[in-house]
Image (cartoon, rainbow, N blue to C red; front, side, top):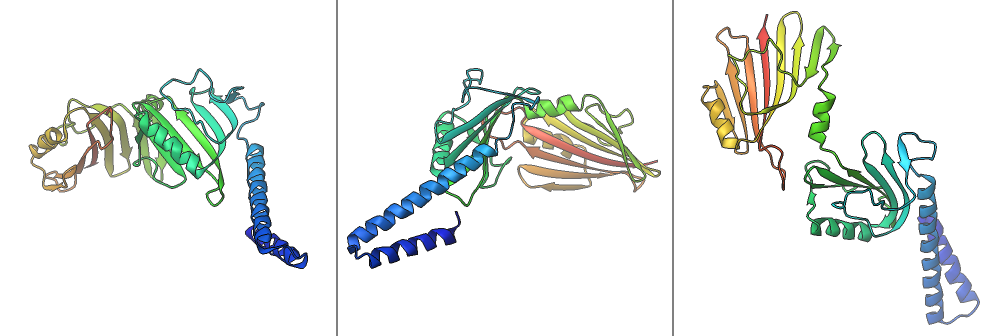
Length: 296
């Protein structure tokens, strides 16, 4: 029901009370009752619409529709949403993650955030940072809350429980090399350092784990992009690249960029070293991104 309809009904109610000679206090009470009834009707309409918008049907083979709201199979570390009206719970067959749908007020959603914080979950503002999307981490697990219908009193809420480590998922996806072309250039992406990578020109920091490796080539140049993750402290990694005598250095504290140029005046490399700012348990302390361009 639109705001215009609500206002019109309130005005008509007030006019009827004047015509029928009701007292002022009685008129105010009846108007309040009318407003309350309209709000309840609107919320009920939202709830019914949310049920109609259920994300998954029984015929959807990608998920298993669960009969219970919060199945016992959900790991105990996750915090149950004890608010609002439950709509549907499904488990995704491909990764074992969960999606749970509700309708709830913003106050109820804020209470759930308090429940998460009390249970030790950390608000991950670096990953999601919008009023309609919340993200909380606990080790390798993630709880994300998507809030629909932001302009209404009652919201359509989607809670997604991710039981996997995204970084490891990405690595698994890249175990097999991906080859593609853009324009006149060809590219190979994976997690294996390319055989032609120029280690002497721009050494890779050790110990570290390769998160991504990309080799690109056209008629004139060969380019490399390497992503490394290390459990060594930021300053130690910085010291390694400073010791290689870069031509340019830009150190901004928790992030530093080093530029290397070859004697031929054509080949160059940039190394970005950044500290992991995530709170709680960390899978790496320092990330290194290397970009190299060499001429043929």
